[in-house]
Image (cartoon, rainbow, N blue to C red):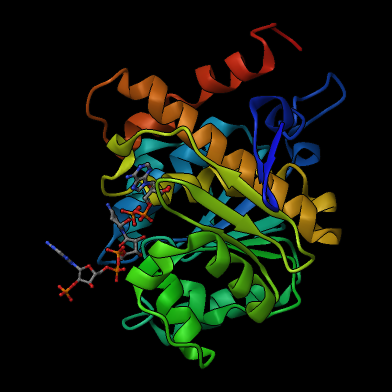
Length: 284
Ligand SMILES: NC(=O)C1=CN([C@@H]2O[C@H](COP(=O)(O)OP(=O)(O)OC[C@H]3O[C@@H](n4cnc5c(N)ncnc54)[C@H](OP(=O)(O)O)[C@@H]3O)[C@@H](O)[C@H]2O)[C@@H](O)CC1
Ligand SMILES: Nc1ncnc2c1ncn2[C@@H]1O[C@H](COP(=O)(O)OP(=O)(O)O)[C@@H](O)[C@H]1O
């Protein structure tokens, strides 16, 4: 473990502790159910990417709610997914949505989901719906965080955020009172309680469309499988976020092997990445 300044550099050893390995006594519900409200008519593919990543990370079940086209694509790719309303342990919302074109019905559905107070991951097109003080982790890139801060009266360009990502992640967590995962070549995670974690060692081949949607799915699955801890402790949410980012980076390295990758390749590399992280012991 390295701590540079106030930043804790996240390691595989620490990430390992946040993989919920199922026990003989588990069933799908005891492992945790992730509710996903993602995708839109404009971006149906983002729903597929997030669902694939969540399933490949390991979760008891995914319940998906979204527009018909996205739902059809999700089910065509992953028949394991259950559609419609139902009980969940955590939510992932916003990937593949645009706050500017989001329907009133979708806005109401996401607001109701977040109002349940369950631990939630909020991405892209639902960042405007975040309420401080809840067990929420947001996953913006620089443009998204710049726009979100502006809603709270703080003006900073995406370029300014990129020049000092750690400082801005900390400031955003304090202002918004949620855990912030600020994406970049180095990803910075800050909790309102003051935890600061950095994840590096990825590959620039990750700079391709849809990899952020994959990260959302990974984090959603990790939160759903640790719902109780995430509910009660913003620092647990920060450690889960760091673990998701580390898995994302390692899956990208595995999928890339030095060459180009597509977002779905990263999701598909997750099971082998997780097995390697756990030490490759079957049944561990
Ligand atoms: N497969 C899927 O379903 C995918 C779905 N996705 C989903 O898409 C949603 C929006 O996410 P995002 O990151 O694209 O949004 P955002 O920060 O508003 O960026 C817009 C900015 O980019 C700029 N810009 C555009 N084109 C440019 C160009 N050629 N060269 C240079 N600049 C260019 C544009 O600038 P402008 O054209 O206005 O000058 C504007 O500033 C989100 O829900 C995400 O989940 C993605 O994950 C991808 C895969
Ligand atoms: N140059 C880079 N090096 C390493 N990782 C990167 C780089 N650029 C982007 N990433 C990672 O790729 C992902 C891109 O996410 P995002 O910007 O939301 O894309 P999208 O909206 O297309 O899914 C993030 O996890 C980010 O940390």
